[in-house]
Image (cartoon, rainbow, N blue to C red; front, side, top):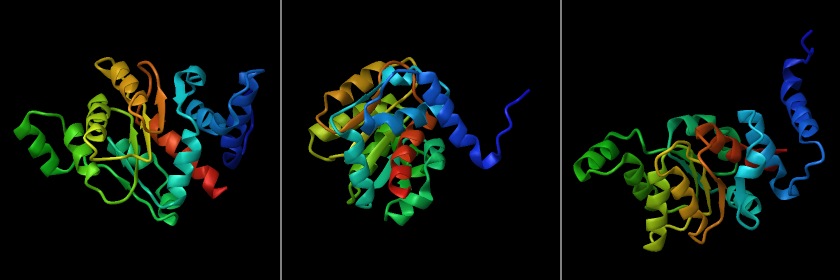
Length: 207
């Protein structure tokens, strides 16, 4: 027989199950809610070991969100999944330039990816930004280049693209870029994971 759970209690029960399945595994308290929300989103316990955090990355991300920073994503899916109500109350918004016609036109003209052009557009923003990258490794490579050129200084980089081509290398590059990061090492990740990490921090502010 299926477990009877009220709709409003499903998420709470899911987190209880995650905690039970983790058994005696103890997570770093600062990172715990981020890791558990990613597991909740993906049903993949590999993220317990795959997610890597620079020192106090979650705390720095929360501080940036409290300060009204914006979030830049590399997919409309990630943008759709981030809680814009909480972010808006803090003075921030979620932006994704990937679908902009002028971005696509410039990328074609230059023979580069839309993700690269999108990161260049984001670097021109005046407000501090968290970059939540769940799909395009070229976005991470572009970010690192822009940082090296002194054109952008992210408040936090969430580097969780999924796939096979340049994915692992792009994540490793961000981990050596000298900025706060949350990275899913290896090939796993995705837009849903990027959004889940953002929401895990936003929900800690809203609770």
